[in-house]
Image (cartoon, rainbow, N blue to C red; front, top):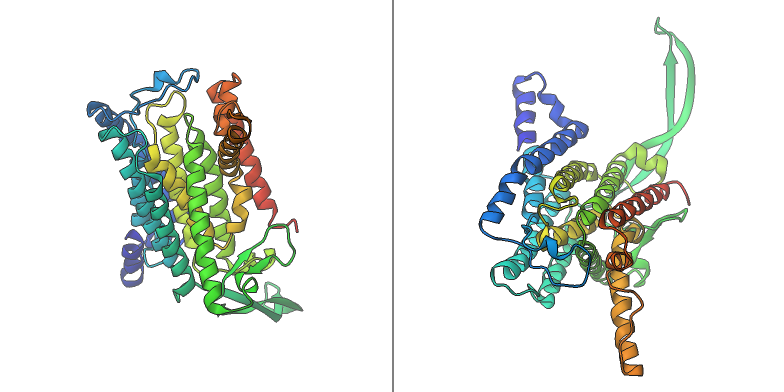
Length: 414
């Protein structure tokens, strides 16, 4: 919105300072500031409103230390996160960018699913909330939309970098030629409609989904859409399972979103993409503005969500955060990096699956169910072992930073 306005003012009237909106760095800084201000300034009013309407979390007694003291804490705070993301991106983002449009749709889509789940829990007093199969249907629907857009939109392309000899001339202050060198540099790029992704730790790191199905174009797109569905569903549910302690999901997600923003900038810059030998994705750098808004919103929400939490994000926030991360990774063709980048989500999900699977197996074999962990997801296991909540959150945050650093290392370590 503001981008288009100031671009018009710059082109038509040459208004001083209006050209600043052409820079992604400037608009990203604005997005962070706006998102932080929205969450911090309006957060307290929203908390008071939720308390006034008695929209609080109903806590089940699981025998965890300090758990029952959280009963009645305002929930559905994910609405605040989504507003703090959407308002800045609508103001300073390029709304004609296909990737930004996809991120906005994904945010609203999963926000609605999470909001419906929280509404049923809070106002209908049904602790199970929205039935799992309906959540899955919603996530699958978003996966189909994202996969279809990535497959069939003519604006979603990867450009093959073509380099060649370029003559570079160096002159002195008088304009006289000092030396002339011939260097190899990117001189052109060919747009390609391909279903490629990035494989970490491999030298020739582009993987073509078409190779799996023998190059058949239709089957390639079907496979890609299936991958998109799996990625959206897995990461969204993984984030949802991680949201179990004050500030846990928020603090773990901030470095993930920042790394995705870095990868988007590098992928959308032809020089850096060529230097790092990664796919050049035109217009992907605009996603940096979205990542900036998301980071600001999460940090601002942490102001109230850190221990002891004054508000919970609920499924409105947790499902959306996971889905946003998944769709973002798909847009920049880095979905195969997610098991490393979102390692916390992966471990939390696996801990639940292993716990449930082992319990069912031992009950069938021995007549009584046995557990591998004291409680799942994994963060509750550490709670049962006596670790204080803030220590668990801080250690998970440190591990998330480590995994994010390892993800960036994959750019060069092959």
